[in-house]
Length: 214
Image (cartoon, rainbow, N blue to C red):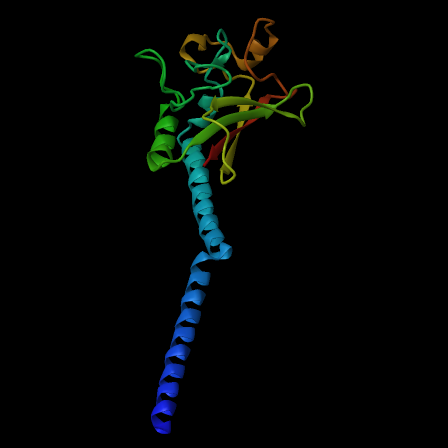
């Protein structure tokens, strides 16, 4: 009888020990899956990849000669980028340089298609800006919104590409491509180009195309 009791006790102890070990293993597995470090690593990897794609998109646009025309795609009358909704929204939900009447000069359409294929089609949102030197205070920059779709999230990534504008360049918007150079527009009191001549030499201004994706 004593032997039977002792055997039952050993069996019970074994079952309890197995439950304890199993519980410990399950807890450890859950801890590995749910730790903030692990999740943070995945987020950082995604952000890093998104940043590379944003930088590549601007690099491709620069190679295709779309960024410098974009910076000059300005309507002096409306004081916005050509055919944009407003100065605050830019092109809003539309890609840059894709609005306007049929037959217009398509100087930077490819940029809009590139950004849509790279980001919008994958569910990402982007803002596009042009930053430029303030002529009165060259160390200070001003900003024009090309595409503005809202306040970026905390996970947004930023890519930039610098573009130099020269005095002898003109505007690229169809209704303002009248042959006048940026230097001539700058000397005209009626001019409404967003940037002014910030350099005494042949350089008119240095702008930075800034892409924010989230």
